[in-house]
Image (tube, rainbow, N blue to C red; front, top):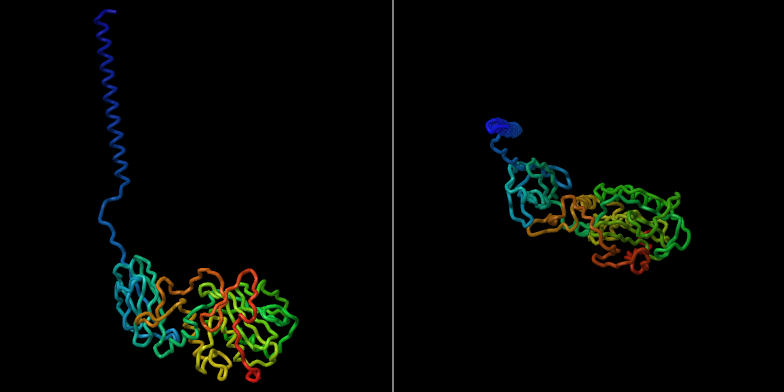
Length: 382
């Protein structure tokens, strides 16, 4: 092949290579433009960001005892430390704040009224929402301090339903079965009536226990300290009635009522007092208008005072107290329901207050001299 023909062939190959290169470049540019077009089509139009929704709160306040509206003086939203975050507008027994300042810091609510005891309790706000609440406060003409005394500083209490088991065919010596025994019909009728009526009243209708009787074939609890039971039995000792209860961090989970087998007609008053005490009460009041008062003037059933004390006790968290100038103060972190169920080692709680005896599980072998005894003369019971 001549030199001239070779040069012609190389020239044609060069033209073809440049043409392919141009096509590849154009294809690449087209793909880039297409990708950008698709990407732009997926992007949302830019614009100003939506403003955050305000956190609002509104609610009403009623009297705990009567359930009637209570006129408010002020409602403050506070930090855990007590520092006031914001103040609500009040009208009558209602309050509101349409835009709470620093709502994430508002953990407490402080309610003041000239018609009731000032109250402070925990608050849980949902950020960016309208929060609606209803709170209760104790009317000022009610004996708040006496409610605390009879309710053992508002603790402990039952937080779960329980069963009352009655040993009505066994005779006990201390905490062990000694033989057989059948209580009088009078005593049994009064015991059943107290369980079905008085317990409801002094627990603010929170507890509605089931009744199981040995004579009806119900199996007894596996142990005398079994969780979820109040156990009633009859003993052969000289003491007429004695009571106690077990609790974990103010959550009662077991109660015990011992009744003498020597008195066939025990008045309803002492029976009511001793079956009501395992609900978390103490009989140290020196007033005759309470089932937890002195024996010489004991009423036959819980009075209006006792029912009101139950409303207070069973609507407040444990360790409710007077803090500074707030008479009705719930501890920080207790929550408005007041149900803190942290388990600790069980203890057997005795009267008077702050006397305790520990026992070791799984057996329940407290000797009878370690159980609180409340002696009443037989002549006072006849």
